[in-house]
Image 1 (tube, rainbow, N blue to C red):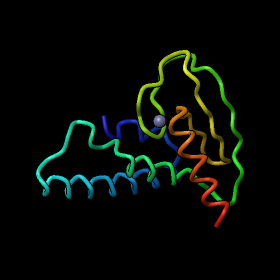
Image 2 (cartoon, helix red, strand yellow):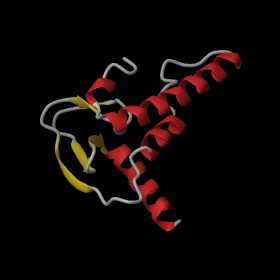
Image 3 (cartoon, helix red, strand yellow):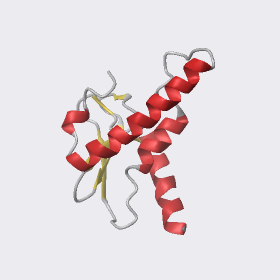
Length: 118
Ligand SMILES: [Zn+2]
């Protein structure tokens, strides 16, 4: 499941996502040393935030669209399946557009605000 959808991303995003995955791999190794991890270990809040940060660009204001998910698809940040009929958010930068669920959109907004306040 991990990384199989990376090929669909554009080059810049792919590089960024690879970096995030390296980080995740490091954390996984750390966890193993501490004695194992649960089945959902790769969707930790830390991991999510790292992915969200990759979508924060202080130099560009993205277009944001929201709507009802027409067919089930995975969220571009957490990978959780968004069922048909749920609210999805489309965040469009000039080089990349992502479709994410409400929870990840909230995280992303938080990170955008934090960046803007710096
Ligand atoms: Zn998500």
